[in-house]
Length: 366
Image 1 (cartoon, rainbow, N blue to C red):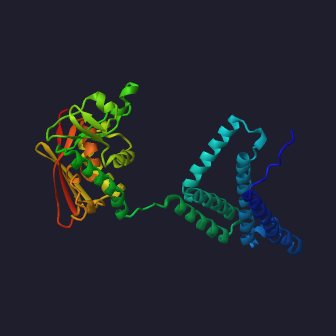
Image 2 (image 1 turned 120 degrees about the vertical axis):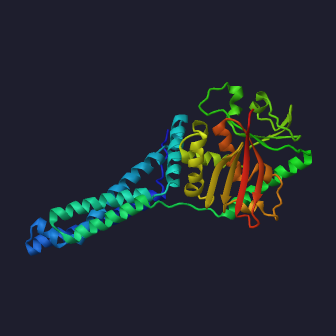
């Protein structure tokens, strides 16, 4: 069988040209740093290093860049050096895994790699400055070390406009309003706590590990059966109502990532102390938040929430006052998971400028 010629990607050709340029640049700087100084001025090797620190630094960077590019070329060649005529299922799977890793690497911010590179080069230059007793090299090494530390610790953070958060939530509340009005459901939404993720459940009960909101048809406290909840049904008959995912479902997962624990593993006191820090400082979803128990209720006061515009009269959502905005819904999920009880929003108060949102939650026995 005739072997097909494998074409190297353009990126490898470009790297090879860059390597050739760096190689001749390194030779050029080595000539002026050492060969010329030793041959013409009769200097020793150490004296040539001391008299030409910039040339030494330049060819050192060129050599390090050459090594790095060679490593990258070998890595790319491993992915592309597979003959199309001899590809098997196993080779395709390996190639797929390599491509997935490359995709994950491309999504990561390169600041940490740049920082480590600067730190290593800076440390090498500082070591060379001590050996050569060169002030210039010492300053260069300190500068590279400083920039390396800066790149390593000052990671870029992506921000999203608050108006975009509102826009993504509008369709959900519009849909909930239309469903409840169309079916003429009058009951208050009830947050049903899930089973812990580490708890063992049979396959047909896996749906019980997901947070659910039950909206009953009548204004009564009712809970669907375990079998109906496990089937993830939308319309329920006994009791009559609908089951939906809470608007704060995504946020509650973020809260647990920041907490590095599930809310089922902590108590209410820990929740009161940790949740405001996560919301205000870590995720910056509000400028201030207060959580405190009031008799048999739990009072939450949120100032300048990123979801405050959802409560405006222009939107006119009715379900937002019973099911909560994404933030107050996520807090209801956290309360349900922590206490292991049903949670309902009893009432809410919104300031005229929508900057202050107050919500009262009630925990109910299942």
